[in-house]
Image: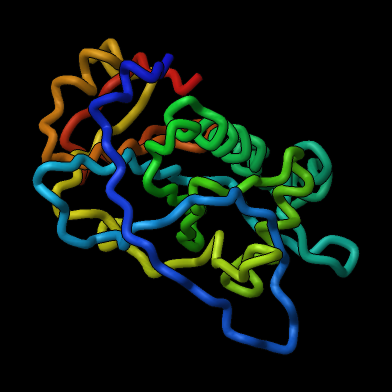
Amino acid sequence: MLTPSANSRLKRKMLETQTQCSEEKEEPRELDSKIGKVDRVLGSPQDPNVRSGAIFILENASLKKGLVKKEWKILNSHDDANLLLKQNKSLNDYRPDIVFEALRSVIDSPLNKYGLVEAIFVKIDGGALFEIKPHVRIPRTCKRFCGLIVDLLRKSRVCAKDTNEVLIRVVEEPVMRHLPVNSHIVGLSYNSKKVVHIDDYVSSLSDHMTPVFVVGAMVNGKVKEDHTHDYISGIKLN
């Protein structure tokens, strides 16, 4: 469990920015945002005396769009099983519930509640990369979440209802270009032989590092180790 004491060494550096949605004929879907949260500019130089909050990357998310009864939707192994099997698709590749639960775990975690999650990125398996602001209240059901993702993929962004702040947006790949230069990238997997205690692990990191946790949001496989500095197991968010 990530407790306040485990998070005390993580200090959030924040730069106030204002991002407005450009006007277009079709209004983007609106979400409520929490009051009093501000963002930093990803990739910006870091104050050497302040550690930024953690960044999460959810890889290989099963958010695949399909046309069903003349409407676009995110396909899933439960409702669309017959269609997928007729197309010889593996049902394991259509599990949007996995990334949905992973997102909820991060957003609802003590780490985020104490303002210590800096950014969240989601990489769709074979598709787009998008960023979610940590203070977003995502839909509480997977079905509504999938509807939100369909809107996101069509319009490239989702805005706050009252402020027009961009809360979710499609960003350019690769994700590495959006990370601070002082990132310490950690792959998370139950299969890793390196089992750690979260308090000890976080405390061992230099104050000059920004922790970046990479999580696989799929049924099979594991996150790529190409850019990871470490590969660990044993971390729970709540």
